[in-house]
Picture 1 (cartoon, one colour):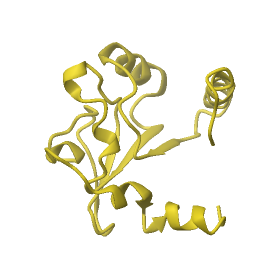
Picture 2 (cartoon, helix red, strand yellow):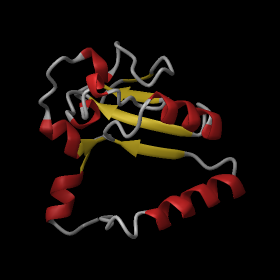
Picture 3 (spheres, one colour):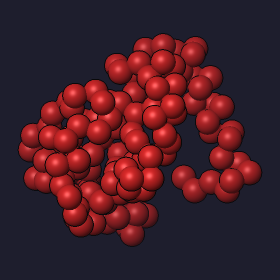
Picture 4 (cartoon, one colour):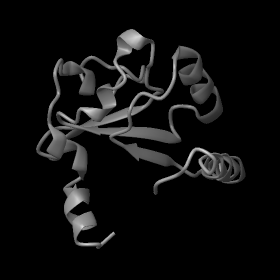
Length: 131
């Protein structure tokens, strides 16, 4: 879903609404960039905990590495890292920046890893208008 800045708040409000009405609801993001600083990550953790929101990363996907950490952006927990072949996964240490998961790669350039998650090729399906 593409959102203009003026409409981006509505889905966020809806998301928070559902999280508070349905505490058993889980959120999964795939290949998400860093979106806030340490205070944001701490607030995220206090609102959602580590068991309701999962940030899925895959192999050498470059997007989870932007913006760079030197800009003080960090990920909120909890990362679930899938290897490049989509055959094994691990739930990472809960820091949001586990050096044994996606952060193990210094120069991740696997663009195809960004469009393919859990064996599903989003780009291919988008080009076929199958989504």
